[in-house]
Length: 52
Image 1 (cartoon, rainbow, N blue to C red):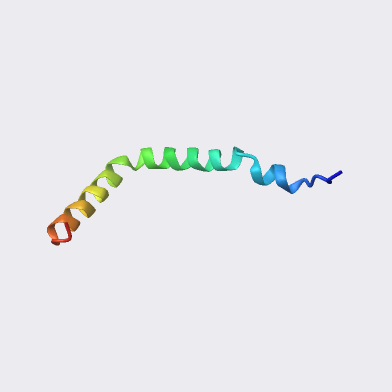
Image 2 (image 1 turned 90 degrees about the vertical axis):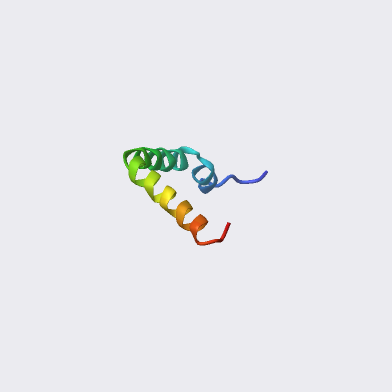
């Protein structure tokens, strides 16, 4: 029989990625107005530069 290691359940456990993504979503929500203007400014600069 194959011996199971203890590293595999830790590496495949979705708790850490879910926690990190949840934290990132909360931080992004707090900075939503700033991020909105940053994305809008980036898109405006891209379109005004003639790259479109």
